[in-house]
Length: 423
Image (tube, rainbow, N blue to C red):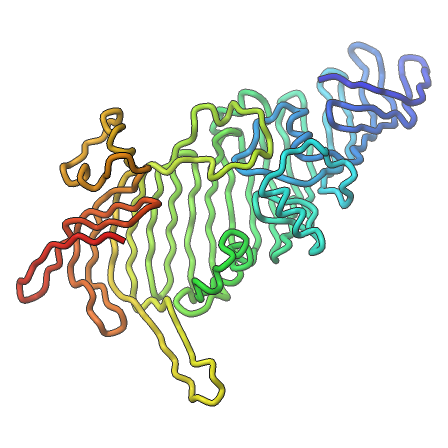
């Protein structure tokens, strides 16, 4: 990529060149600069003040030949920085932030959930968006050394439209080698966010389906790994959570191969591990902002949930003439599940999976991918009603149905039975 459409005033003085109101384009990035630089091959240095009036974030990434992220971005960026140091290895020091004007947004940018979130939240103050989450402010200070290609990031600050603020600092090795090097990224974030408001952007009926509220989440996140396979280690607490989520806390790990969730409160303990994989050509794609579903494929799920009077439903009479009649549904017991995603019956021979006869029976010829595995439930109670003292069997979940086969219920008197349930 080279500079083009350059204009400005030049003044030659000895072995120095002075620039005044110089402007041009570096790929899709508009540049303005003033200052001077030496032309001596060994002692020459840059002393330039540069400005980027505004550039669409995806156009910026394309200009620097960056790979698209897992989730889409939307918004425009402005920057003010100094270019200083030797001619062959200058250092850039400055500040970048999301722009308050949209005049630089590219008209040929493909629509995405991020651009839709930005458009629908402009009146609320949105200036940028990451996936479905809009931001009202994002800024960061940076130092980029072209000698070692290390970017130091500090003073990172982001404000969410839905409530909350995130701050951070760290460094990243931005070069082709950093795409695979596991030590390329080391960035730490901390802050808070309004969890319930964000969930509403993904599940519009959340408040009606899930009356339980987590409220504001406080958390710390460590971002590490390679540029193409970053790892997120998140620790969170929910000091304002209500009901069974009161005093909830936990940690989340998001990596290229798996996602794990550990969380707990006085009413429950949850451990979940999801095995994931990505298409072979995903990180080689050049397209930005292309609408797509979850970029990874789920290969397996492991779940262990213990509940101790977990209240999942509460209802109070809404009629003012009636005396309040509260209805509380609380669950106790333990649920364990471990399964894999299996392909339709016609493709089973192509998989290196050791499947039992029951696993094969759980799959119907021609269906879509199904999550199949062993499930066990013990001591399951709804309020004072015992639903399943001991239950085990095979569970299959697909977009078409939920099927439980060879479910065995064991009661204290020794009575056992097998059932087939399809939902």
